[in-house]
Amino acid sequence: MNAIINVMRRELNGYFATPVAYVFLIIFLVMTGIFTFYLGNFYERGYADLDPFFRFHPWLYLFLVPAISMRLWAEERRLGTIELLFTLPMTTIQAVLGKFLAAWVFIGLALLLTLTMWITVNYLGDPDNGVILAAYIGSWLMAGGFLAIGSCMSALTRNQVVAFILSVVVCFLFLLSGLPMVMNVFTGWAPQSVLDGVASMSFLKHFSDISKGVIDLRDLVYFVLMIGFWLLANVLILDMKKAD
Amino acid sequence: MIEVKSLCKTYGAIKAVDDLSFTVEDGQVLGFLGPNGAGKSTTMKMITGFLTPTSGTALIDGIDVVENSVAARARIGYLPEGAPSYGEMTVRQFLTFVARARLIEKNEVTESVSRVIKKLNLAEVRHQVIDTLSKGFKRRVGLAQAIIHDPQILILDEPTDGLDPNQKREVRGLIRDMSKDKIIIISTHILEEVQAVCNRVMIIAHGKLLADDTPQDLIARSRYHNAVSLVVKSAEKVASALSELPEVARVELNEGELTLFPAGEGDLFGAVTAEIRENAWQVTSLRLEAGRLDQVFHSITQGGAST
Image (cartoon, rainbow over all chains, first blue to last red; front, side):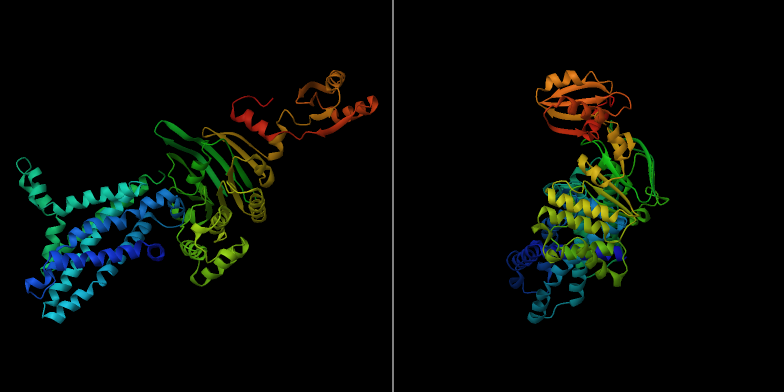
C-alpha cells in the first residue's frame, strides 16, 4: 500500500511540476463550458439539470484522457526510468496502480473544479441533485475506464504519439460499441449473443444509464471490471517486455 | 554474496548472455569488462531483477531474483546505464521518493536523504530540478539514489561514462570508499578504471565469460609483461646489439621506441641497464613494462591468444 501511495504521490507531483496539469485543467474547464452552454443550449432548454454538461463528457474524455495517459509508461520507457522503477523493491502491480490512481485522482480533481456548474444550476432552479451526483460518479468511473485503456496502450510503446493514437482508437471502439456504426460490422454473420456482448461493452450506454440517476450495480461492475481488465493487461505487457 | 547460475538471455536468435556462472564474495569490487554489446548491461539487468532471464538465475544472499524478485531487489543498490532519473523533480524530492520506495522507515527518510546529499556533495543543488543539472551532478544524483538504503550490494552500470576526468576521479574515489565490506559490480569499457578500483575483473564478449582474474594477473598475461622499453640514439644499432643478450627473446622497434621482450626468468632490466652503462648509449627514456591491459583486452576479446 505504501509503495502505491509513494508512486501515486510522485506522479501527482510530476503533473504539477510541469505545465501538463495546468494545461489539462484549463482546457477541460473551457471545453466543458463551451459544450454545455453553446452546443448543449444550457439556458435555452429551460430545464434545471446538468444533462447538457454530462452529455459531452464521453467525447471530451475520448481525447483528453489519452492526452493524460499517453505519457504514463511511454515516457518511462523513453527516459529509461522504467529501469529505475522496476529495480526498486515494488511489484509491477503496485507501480501500475500507483500511476493509474494518480491520473484518476487528477481527473477527479478536474471534475471537482466543475462543481461551479452544479452550484449554478442550483442557483437558477431546483434540480434533482441525486441525479447530478450519480452522473458525477458515472463520469468519473467512465474516465477511469478510458484511463485504464490509455495506460495499457502507453505501456506498448516508447512513443507518446503512438500511445495517444492507439488509446483514442481503442477508446472510440469501446465508446461506440453499442451504436450502429460498430454493430453493423457484426450484424448478419455474428450470433445474437456476440451482438449482445458487443453492445453491452459500450461506455456510452453504461454512462448514460448512470447519468439518468439510476446507479445500477451492473453498471458499476461493468466499469470496475473494465478498469481491472485493462490494468491487468497493462501489468502483463510490462512484465513481458520491460526492456524495449 | 551473489551467485550467478547459468544465466542466459536470448533475443530471438541472438544470445545476449550465454550460460554465465560466477560467484561474487563480500569485499570484492568486480569489474565487468567487454566491448559494447558484450552483454554486460543485460547481465546486470538480470541480476537486479529488471529483466527475467531466459534460463538460469541469480541468488542475492541466497534469495532467488526470479522467484523472489522484490526481496532480492531490496538488497541491491543499482545505477542503471545513463543514470536515469525523473527530471521534473528536485534532487531532494527524487531522493525522498527513492528512499520511501526503498522501504526506509518513515522517520529515517529525511535523515537518509540528507546523508547521501552530504556524501555526494549535492547540497548546493538539492532544491534544483534535476533536468537543469549538469551531467556530473546528474550522475551523482544517480549514485545517491543507489546508495540511499546503504545496500550490501551495489551494481553500477558505466558509472563514469561521459564524465570529465575530474569527475571520473571523484566517482572512483567514492566507489573505493564504499568498497570496504560490500560487493560492488561495475561495468565499463574504460580499462584504466578497472585498474583504479577493481580487485577482480571479468572479461565478457558475445555473452560469454572469457577471463576472470585479478587486474594484476590479467596484466601479467600481456606479452609486454616485464618487457623493457627504451628510447635511444641510433636505435637500430642498439637493437642488434641487445638482441644478442640471452635474456632477450625478441626486439621490436616502434616509432623510435625499442621494446625488448624477455626470454625466460632472467633479469632483463638489469642486463639492459648494465649494457647501456657499458656502451655509454644515450638513453632518453627507459622503463620496465607492467603489461598493457588494452593489449590483453584486445587479444582476449578478438579471439587471438594472449601471446
